Length: 479
Image (cartoon, rainbow, N blue to C red; front, side, top):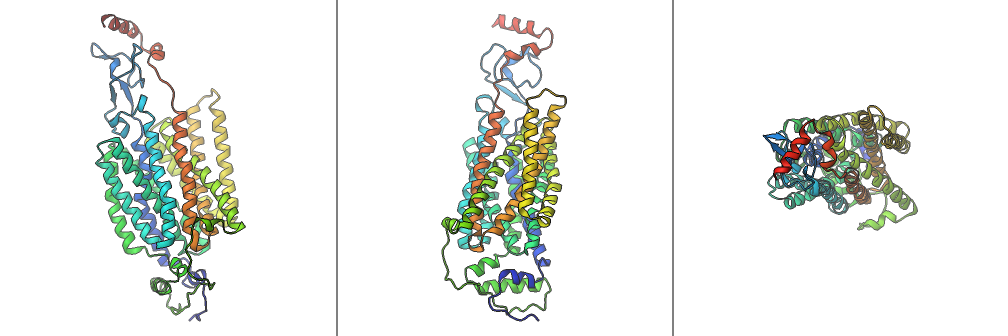
């Protein structure tokens, strides 16, 4: 039996408990499964705010025939007046088709996306701070409740304002989840396994599943209802199985509760040689303190860590969410594009995880950012050229950039967790998530600005079939 050592550190306890044992595996599997509902709630807005094929009804009917090509998305009639009535393809019903968010209202979908991301941004700083005060698990559970209840409210939305409010609190919920779940996993695993448990590609796997489900469920309300219903067993599993962080108990001098968790880990890992009487006192003799954002700038080292990490996070926020919501504008099938974007992220995350353990988190992050830069620069140059297969090449480059930024998230998040002390880890992670949230709010707006051409019907008359122009002239003559 191991001998009790005075002031044993949490890392030594985890090592003596067997490192990444059965308990840690079960914990990480449950959290990644619970993450399904969070992934759905954050990614389904890409589908919900997508624009189905549509046309102006005012350009219809001359002997029951459309006066323009099918689904010609123009905001003006053939007379040059503003269109008052629209038709959308019946196969898919999105927020855009239900509330007619096109033409003058085409800015609303990207605004709704930014509102949801603003909710996540707010919760990162608020719930991250509270989690360091009250514990990881309460905020973890509250976040899940926010998501499932907000998605249910979204399902019953009768107005855009009601949906926007539900989107904000959905974002508030999943922001709190992302802030706490990495810490819950990493604080129970040894350093050599943290890159794997944090970088495990559960999010892209969930997105692949969501794209397949959404391909069959073409009704945006039912996607929200499905997410809400899925959240109920997820909440129950989290409540029954996921423990509070024993490191948090130790940092806040709740040693009896920490010892209970350590005993349960030893029992579940079948580590009968572990000395459950081990002393879990902290290494320092300082009294219990209250920590705040100011502690992130307490030393010169922490200032450097915070500032450079903030630059990484806001850059990733802009690029990742710009690419995510830019999927709607790529050529090809939306659901297939989401599936491919998510699928290609899985091997890139695996490679980044391997590299972070092999050459270090910092160098692995440098490689990911370099690939993103090359793909983005090549894609930008490509837009200025008139080349064959331009749309397909743009999609491929976007997939490469998306895979690399998603891989960079894992390495950056692992570094963030490891660089901050336990007592301010959630505050640091929450604050950096808030800064990344600023970038995520900006990302969809960049997509809207790029994809906001002025479309008219008049400049497309030349593309109409032969004889239609004469029919238009005849119709106009009778008006």
